[in-house]
Image: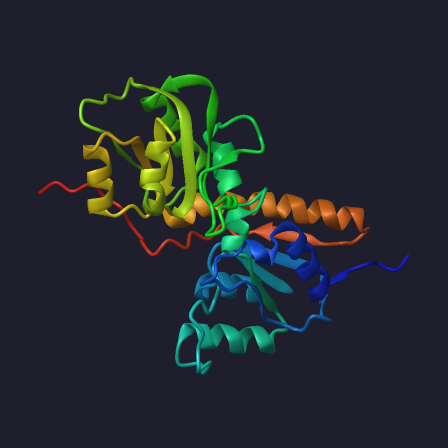
Length: 284
């Protein structure tokens, strides 16, 4: 029996069904970055970032395609020489017949996307999880989600739940609490948004969340939010809060491939692509 394989175009079609382009933010870039739509695909690598380490993993591992969350060229480019790492990725992928595509804010907002994966890891019940954000037309987007836990837990226990759910990385996890809030405070309503989430600080306060799980929180917005009595903040790394989506993507691609009778190997990269290398408490 002849084995059946998808092409790059087939993968693009499946990704469009899972993460429609209309969900992306206006400033974003998503889709096929490098590759021939007619190229057969047998092995796919999944990662958050298209950087030197994940590109090398795709090359040395013999993958036909790398699918990442973040785009390689968010703001466009006029040059793709080997003088910088992005140009080197383009050259090396073309030479090795490796396709590269991404799903960014369309995957953030999708029904089984980044925010959904983080909400599930946080223990929010009642799928589909309620969204916390709207577009300019007032339509629900899904970049963030909110909901209740099965039963309330202490803030201390909830913080440990998130610490166990996120992949290991040097950034770790931070907890911020409003004045006079202790670690035994009850957590029932949880809001989440993967990646940089300080845009929703006011929103999660208005929605009555007890805690907000996100990443990339800046000093002043976080401090002012807590001083004003906003929900407790659990701040992970950008990479870690978005990585949780990759196993979901793997499972959904594999399920679709099985339905199509297609032979496809999909691997989630274990490379930590945070910009940080080492973390230590300070003692000075």
